[in-house]
Length: 370
Image 1 (cartoon, rainbow, N blue to C red):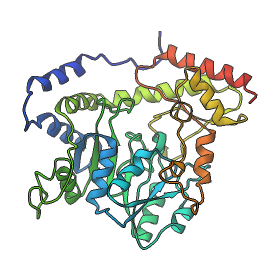
Image 2 (image 1 turned 180 degrees about the vertical axis):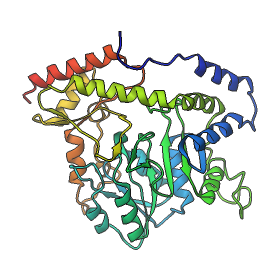
Image 3 (image 1 turned 45 degrees about the vertical axis):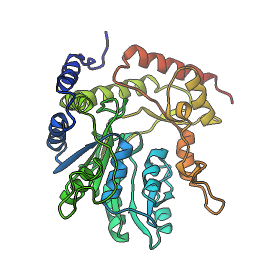
Image 4 (image 1 turned 60 degrees about the vertical axis):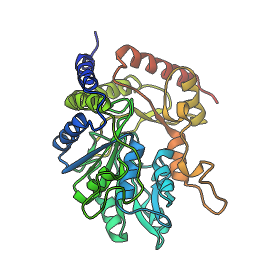
């Protein structure tokens, strides 16, 4: 008998998707998308929600909406995946990678300040693994430097800090609904904002500028096809209605796994800040063993999925397209990734799966000598 909250039945998901399919083909169909966006504003107290085809596209559209373009620079944490930096490049701008503090996982604001130039327009904080930096410090820094905040909150839905929800710190919050996220639709994303003009730009941008914002003409500028498909919107809306249950299950799963590993050699849970309400997106442990990255890769080979071991996550500034001989590496980000075991779980992982992961991790940690 499991101590976790029960896994939800799939009937409602199936019914919602079938209902959307029944209305197809309809080239102008947007009923499910419109209802989903309305529900998002109700659920997360945002004035506007715009759904798009992916979390990456949410960032792309949001950065376009604030005016990022050729010649601009955008501060991006090195502690992130390449999907955060790619939209900056695709808009013709340059990502400038900022280090992070290993003690807090938050941005290194001294490093960020040193990298600002006259071309710096925005900062994109990333709430990796659902962990959130200090919103007051971020707002103060951005205000002092004249920067616009576009949050990459892809993994942070349900997290808040000091009463501020992830995705509501700055101009826009960008979220992903890829499989594995707490709110999922297989693929998709959305932008939250309180700014009407930004929301109108994102809506136009996701659909070839066919429905332009006020003051613009249809197809007056080039945009993209980034609409969320109706069946996926229906699936997302059904999951949104159960979001509190999804969040509760993920929290219970992470607590269960971390409790099972409390005696594991060389592994220490990473605790959220005292004012942080973490969504528990991924069980996080500091690896105090020799050659910690190799240990994470070793676990992945033995069937325990994790960020650095399974996906070879490295600081984004070390990716081949971003490396430069005249740029110092972000050593704090590297230290965090090398020493963090970020376990990958989904809502389908029951107590037996989590206990198997814990047994493998504890056994391999006890034997590790690399």
